[in-house]
Length: 218
Ligand code: DX5
Ligand code: ZN
Image 1 (cartoon, protein in one colour):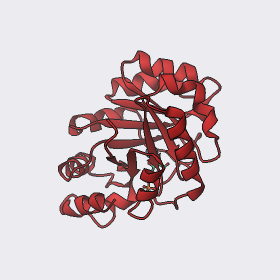
Image 2 (spheres, protein in one colour):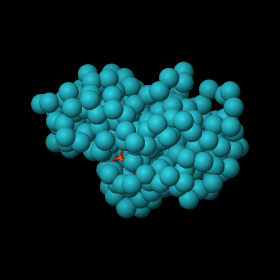
Image 3 (tube, rainbow, N blue to C red):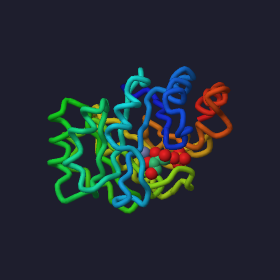
């Protein structure tokens, strides 16, 4: 289903209140919950291990989209599946065998995504598309929320939309998505928009209406 989906990234949520933050964004209309997993190696930041993701799970009633920015990744696929991810996305740059990684994700019964860093050509996923439910185009260098959108990636999204054709594969965009850049990525062909700082900015679990207004502005 190609209807536009908003997937707030809880990387920008209050780290002492994840359960309440997840409930607040879902109550305000979030379609998916995006979880950014970082290993301090593939990207220069550290976030959530499988036990943390497992703790988020009972609070998510929509769809838990887990973005693995870790390398090597294969050894952790089962652990994140067991922690309750609905979709597991790995980076095509995470190792020499992204095809094997996608097979491993598919073997868990979860949806499978492949992510592209800004410097990686879209052709890198050409032979992987038949193993994917989603391709994630990074529009910042992964590692941190609140960075500036890289406009040169729009062409990549459009090219990917052509490559996908009528296959049921989502195009997700992650990084610097806000009310100004969202129309551009949708125009280029994206259908799942991750947004961290643009959703959580100015809101709180005590005043979740701000999250709703931020999401509607996107
Ligand atoms: C970046 C993460 C993103 C990040 C997006 O490494 O993958 O999901 O949280 O944050 P914003 O929307 O603030 O750019
Ligand atoms: Zn992400």
